[in-house]
Image (cartoon, rainbow, N blue to C red; front, side):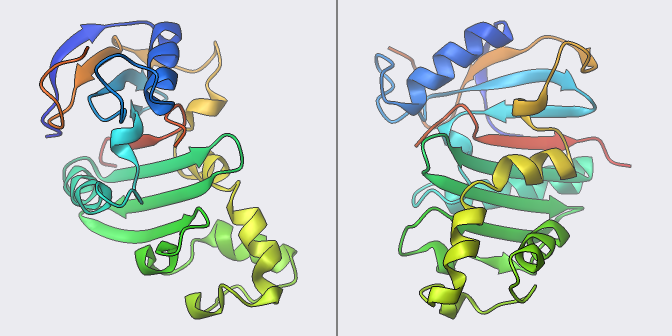
Length: 209
């Protein structure tokens, strides 16, 4: 469904090194990091697809990631895409269920963040805003209001927490996580050969329940 080709088995450790290189533009022949992704074995009932190609709020890839998540969720029940910048570069999340997009939200500090917003706030978003003393619902047109500064800061780090709450986050995997199958490194339709922080960008597709 994703159009990936030439899968090569790799370990988690090998994949982490390669995808990190992609995210920093350090990989030969893959300067934008879009040429390949890591497809994990089934981990705790989910499959993780990791790499910059999965960024739900990328200016060039966002619409395609939205389409893919919608189609994956129609087939498997749930699909999610995340971006997380390790060095304070923000967060983004896209949640789809049974062919419908429930939420897309970007908190990266970019001017077009508000234009990317879709759906209603997730329960975790509402809860975090209430903890900050803010209204659980808000208008994206007030993003520049000083009262929203605390939320902007909190949202920058929220993607891993949402991923863990709604599915499986790659940042919470342990030796005890149930694993079935073999992970592979695969080429994306964006490139035919090999030569942002990528390590935490993830699309998750789980079996229908």
